[in-house]
Each structure stands twice: as C-alpha cells, then as structure tokens.
Length: 152
Figure 1 (cartoon, rainbow, N blue to C red):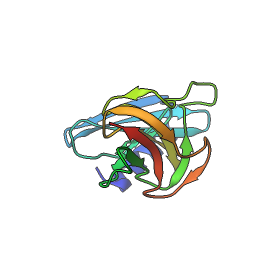
Figure 2 (figure 1 turned 120 degrees about the vertical axis):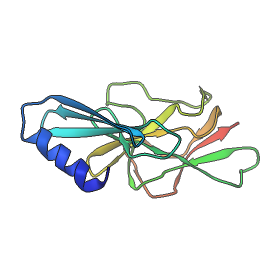
Figure 3 (figure 1 turned 45 degrees about the vertical axis):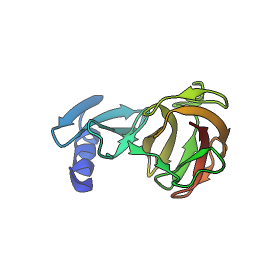
Figure 4 (figure 1 turned 135 degrees about the vertical axis):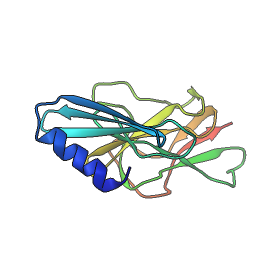
C-alpha cells in the first residue's frame, strides 16, 4: 500500500461518519484509522519482520528503531527512524512507555514520534535495560538522532 492509497483512506474516513476503520492487508501490515476530535489518525502495525509505516494513540506509522552498529562501551543506541516530535507517552496524562532502569524486550514500544500529524510508535530492536533517555518529552528529533541507550 503506498502513501496515496493511505491518503485516500484518510480522506474517506474524514468525509464519513465513521469513528474507526480497520484494514488488514496481506502485504504485511494493518491500518487502523480513528477519528479523534477533528483529526483522523493512522495506525500501521507490521505483521511480518519487514519495516512498515505506523502511528500511535490516534495514528501510527510503525517504523522500527535504527540500532547503532558500533556500541558505545557496552550500550546500544536506539535512534529515530524519522524526523518529528518525541513523546514519552500515548497522551499527556498517560504514564511514559519506558523509564530509566526499565527492562524492555525486542518489539516493546519505547516512545511515539509525531510526524505530519501521524503518531509513530517506535519499538525496541533489542532486549535490555534502558540506561539513558537522550531527549525530552515534546522535543523535536532528527532522522538517526539517538533517543535511548540500552544495555543488552
């Protein structure tokens, strides 16, 4: 499914009375469109090992976190796969997905990055312990910017 097809789906939901639509595609991902106040969010969740677009509470363009090939000492840096705004939780009143000293498994959601009003759940590529969170909630992040340091 390409970007234009996704945009058409969003337009259809925006112009209808639908509150939520779920579309599963055999190509390896699932799209959930939810109406939230005045916006529609997209949630693309990978079904296969291949990276897929994803979003969060209202939207989700799931992209796996890039992992630095050279560890800093014995730590692995999880990096932003996109440019956007970093959020530690799914909503302002929700608890953060992870905190320092939390143990995570590969595939656990670490944070959300909002890009063009799409919420992208960022997942851990390795299992381990969160040693450092390198960005603040609400901070703009760049492509390939380190977000977390994880001790495997």
